[in-house]
Image (cartoon, rainbow, N blue to C red; front, top):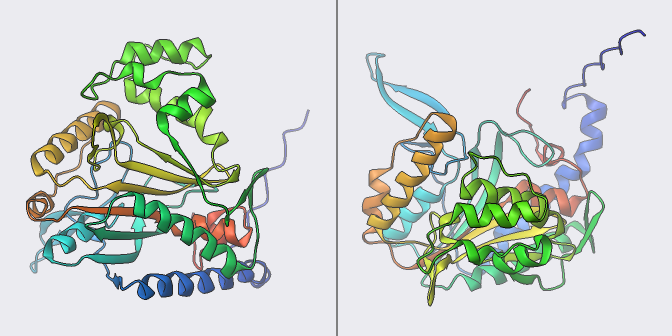
Amino acid sequence: MAADAPSPPRSPWWTPSIHADRRPFLMVRNRITRAVRGWFEDQDFVEVEAAALQVSPGNEAHLHAFQTTMLSLAGDPDQTLYLHTSPEFACKKLLAAGEDKIFDFARVWRNRERGPLHHPEFVMLEWYRAGAPYQTLMDDCAALLSLAAETAGTRRFSFKGMDCDPFTAPERLSVAEAFERHAGVNLLASLDASGKTDRDALAASATAVGIRVADDDSWADVFSRVIVEKVEPNLGQGRATILCEYPVAEAALARPKPGDPRVAERFELYACGVELANAFGELTDPAEQRRRFVAEMDEKARIYGERYPLDEDFLAALEIMPEASGSALGFDRLVMLAAGASRVDQVMWVPVAG
């Protein structure tokens, strides 16, 4: 049997006919950008611009950064810097400096990420409210969903066979409830009163419902597999879902929930099975933040054989940062759903080559 013929090379995005097909999506993007900027400004937010080059790109185990070297005036290597994976550290320094309501249409970079919902460079819409509870950000997310849909002129979001009404208030579902409902797994049985994890307890529960667990999987590995295989595919169907109260072990930058230290003030927003936003009641304890970052980097070193430095300037700023809540929303994904596109690169003016 003859071998299959190689697929013809894909024409570049700047081919006039391809650009003509993409242009309606890009016009929707521009309209949503203006509408969202106006929404924040109407609420007296200040727009800020975080520097992309940072001493630390972020300290999450599974995020991968682009690294570069800053040279001295003589041309000698002077300092290792990274393109940030989020403007979070910079925005929190601005809160410490005295700003109280800020937002940033930030360009961010993440290595090892490319697909229908991922791109090496994308726009992260981040906003922070000093002194506000994190439930306020749930209302913000619902408002931004309906604003994007109204601006795009659509009544429904659709993606890969799932539909979502962006004008209906999102359901609020705790992670423990989602594990029970969609996977039949008792998540809280694998956490002690302080939030410490029991790997074997979670592995046994996951195995019992048919989820593959390897001998060297950590508690975090099993947690992630349950989320990806059983929970996420059921979120944001019919209406958006706010998945909240993550275990503290899965919320490195969030403060514990008052009255239940097993879980944290963290939520994620889903529509049509697509994760759109990640929000926290922000942790402001620098010693605890350092401990969590070190644990994340230990995990990164275990899995990937590398680690990123800590931003000591950020940890110092936490000493005077006010209580606050913040959210990061994948702006390209929101536009993709509102415009009816099937890939995030269809709503980017200039996708990264490759």
